[in-house]
Length: 203
View (tube, rainbow, N blue to C red):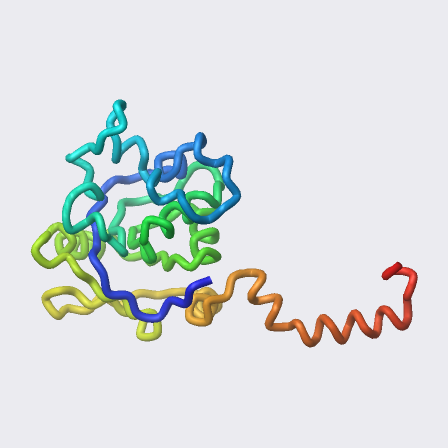
């Protein structure tokens, strides 16, 4: 998993509440078990018309938001089914951070396990960042995870909280498997002792 330290990038304003995982990535694209290739289908129903052409009114189809790395969203982002393909699609598009007043619990957990930083902020602070993102001339924000702060284009700073364990996982680029591998020596030692005591388990 890619480490997350400090991210400076275009922030896209997506002020919509209750964006569910089917809106993030429709069920028809869940056949793959690869984490790559889903970015082109992110927000499929919103980004494309019925004939497959781009919807010019959708924010991610406009400059400079085609290169967005940060998404400023509404309440309850990521609700609905627990599909892990939702954070896969966001990450494959290039989104590494989503800022919103609230997130669905399973989506929240899945996102951190896939290297995406989710930041909960009070609505009035989200509104400030939403306004910054709407200034297309300079919609860049800097998200500094070690300092737990978001630096705005006007020089202002918004502080945020993050669970210490999840923060450390992102800083080190560790998913669940990576966390387990940190204990590889202890696991190997246990297996060696167990093999000596109960060799039949290894036949």
